[in-house]
Length: 115
Length: 115
Image (cartoon, rainbow over all chains, first blue to last red):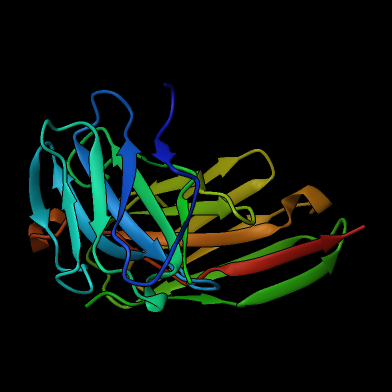
């Protein structure tokens, strides 16, 4: 596709359930970012990939959060044993170069609600 | 650690007014600064990106300026329209010499333009 695609758009999970969120970046983009955005807040950094290498995961809030990008394209963010405080919009962004020296493009996000 | 502040947090104006949204950052060692628009329930749409060596960028009714030394950027919206209603976010990309590729977001300015 022409843009960054995220799926599902909406996810409702029962507390304790595991979830997997998918991001399809723009083809050929080197950098991929995951951000978490709580209601009324700005996006907060979670993790960064350069191709398949996870160079920074300092923003992951706990060891229940895990992200991968095994072939340097599609990325999955997995949250184990979801809790109510995990409810947020999860945004994925990609950029053609390292970091976003050029422009970053964002997907529509996945809205996760934990009940 | 970079901190990004956006003022005002919310703004409600009548159609036709010229607007100024402010973004300030604490660490002036930046690579670029990017302004985004976010509609409710949507992802982020890039509006303007200013490299650290630039002073301003323009796109249609939007003009963004950057004063790196004072840690400030402004987004100027001319002749506002109801369709401009959205949340406006600024994101600061650190200079690579600092070893980080992680952009930091402000919390956004929520704009309502009423007819």
